[in-house]
Length: 313
Image (cartoon, rainbow, N blue to C red; front, side, top):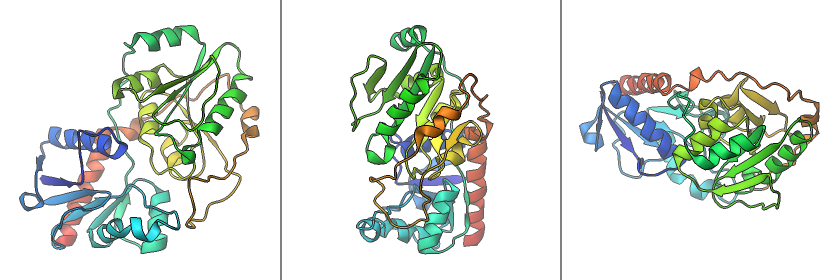
């Protein structure tokens, strides 16, 4: 099959583009050809939105990355996404959360829910600083994001401080990612800023738990990466994150239900972290990450590509 990708930059380290790079590599390894334009292709896979004019009779699959749902942004920021949603022959949603959101506002479309994937391979910890950190602490927690209020860094830190009181032995929290919106002075809390993808994976491999208490997140690539390194995840039941985590961690309830209303997601509801005090932290779940295997995820994309071609015919 000849496949064209629209609105993808494999040189970028953003979540969507990082996943796109893995998908393209796996498609190539399966014998498919990645081409430069839709005219050369059997099918086009659009990431987020089409930025060039693709004829409506050309088989197209839209891989959604969520939609803008702040009230003041909904109409203006979603123009191209909505157009691509209504014109594509098939939709790939990253989560049931995303599917319900788009169907509420734009109606149902043919397609499938396909989460992100990754190579399931435990990396070797080579970075000397990560090695020293692992040797210095009995328990290591990690969180990672491009930080803004929706990601709830403050709550991640508070959760760590509550959990560590229940653990025997020393504990550290490593905060990866740019623009942290909370700063604390604590010798056991480390801010790394942006680091290489290689070191991110090594940090996940060295960690006992990932904290990701973000509100209404879609399908965070960092959570997929943590799980690929057998690092269980503590998240909430909002958005699509818990759909990725499944039984590979701890899902805590939000204080308030969210019914897909337009809202300012940078003003998240408060959460009750008292629930963390009733959990047995002496053992952690054994991670089953087989469903995140990029080979399995790619096969699902191929099925959707074929469906789009059949709908076009």
